Length: 494
Image (cartoon, rainbow, N blue to C red; front, top):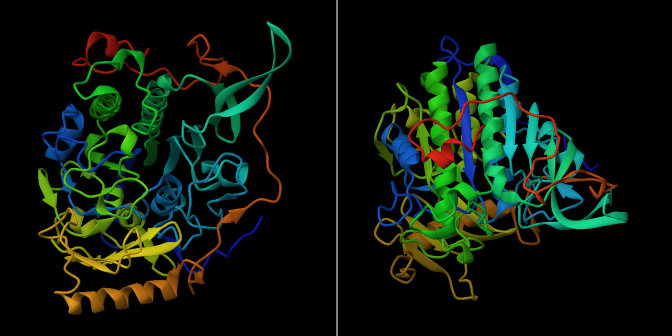
């Protein structure tokens, strides 16, 4: 495998000042898939979706209105979130398909590794999508345990599953490999039950770690609301907003179950919950970008500007709204600060937002943001202006005032030459450091690569033909969804 050195950035095991005397917070990061900026009622009351638990999170915490992810597609965005780097820096430019030779380089320092080095128990549940080979799985990137799919649920492959009672010949089905840690344990043909299964795993992990008194980091990455829509049977036709609303309600009820579990265990005030999306909505999902232009696959703000909510009772001021420029790449140094890690910042792009979250400052340390489309630098913004380096169809540079025109409708490039010059200079510097297209950046690093591929095609139990879960290792028994959900939904978690 191609490797890079541990490269100039690490976190000391020594405690940083400020947090050394305080208990480290538990951290639960909930990542939704293809959720648009306007899909949540707390961002867009006209959306038609019903998310009372996410609304509660916003009311009891901080809601961000200028928060960006590194990419408008899955793999690069997730790799950036995990490493605190623009995806171009770490070589993950495109969506990774099943059985890919490339993946997130194990030599990169991830958020999970930073927290585990500070004593955290770490778990990843759900969609991974930064490499499906063993060398790239969550257990090689700082997570103690992993349960989920290695890529998107629309990437079903025709896989050989071995002989069955009905056939003496090997059978092939369109299925997805379900992993526990580093081993595929079943082939999933029925995705609609996964959201409930992820919740079971999450509640079990929380309960176990609460008993151990050890701080924990739970990364819960839902398949929802990526196309095709797969809400469970209990949630079908529950929403006024079709399958997307159904699936979002299921995720929201799961968040409510997690919040109730934390309260029952007496650890809700010791737990930081973060909710965000990996990128904007795809057109066929009928997701909502609010008044933003574009969506998934684009570098208009509808593709990279996403909801972000943070709740930590007694620490993050309740009911606050932050309009400062911030990004998912800032979460690594921010959570490192909360965990008491002492950072030496070199080789990452993220900035510490802990002061902003705690209400100690109203000014973000982030002054600019770079929009990469795959490996090409497409746009750059500062606190007010956004410059498209060229239009989607090769048009000349376009400049938008995002304060007065967040929908990017009025090109002001001719009227604001100073802003164009300032942002052009920032773009040139980014291209020099991180690269742009075929121009290699001075600081960019290679993705991981394997020399031998494991196709993950083997005899495994099939989960989905009769809706019965195969005999795979089970999590500990967990409590049902709390009272308040419809009766059919209460019964979903045994």
